[in-house]
Structures are given as structure tokens and as C-alpha cells.
Length: 101
Image (cartoon, rainbow, N blue to C red; front, top):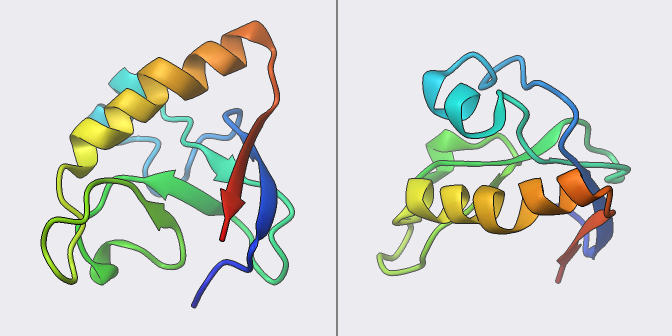
């Protein structure tokens, strides 16, 4: 499946039932993963760590594209995304958006 192209608001206020209890996510973002809002025909689209297609059910995996068919450096990339961009924006009360092309 593919997320339809468009601009989506991202919330950081929902604890993921699947990932929120994992220590990595609890320590980094209190179990509250970035979630895209108002995605047509999808609910619960998250941005999270993963390396292959088996790690996602339509969510967005972040990392580098250095190996065909894999996402590499996912934890490092996710950590930077959270610490440098998403949590500071949330703390300032700023709206967060992602554009899917």
C-alpha cells in the first residue's frame, strides 16, 4: 500500500498501542510516536523505526537508502527527527506537517 500524495498534519499526542510500551520509544518520546492525521483510507499511520517491509503495515520508516530493499540507520535517523525537529516543534506549540510526494 502507499500513502496518497498530499500534505498531512502530524500529531505527537497519541501513545502507540503497538510501539508505545517499548523502552526505546518510552525513553525517546514517552511512547508517543508521530502519527499522520486525515490520511484517506488509512488510520493510524505512524512514523517509526524499521528496516524492511516486514517492519511496517503502511507506516513510514525513516532512515537511509544505502541498501536495495532496506532502510538503514533507522534508529539514528528517527532519534534525530524526534529530538531535533518534532519534539521542539511540539513544545513550542507549532503545527507539524509532512508532505508525501
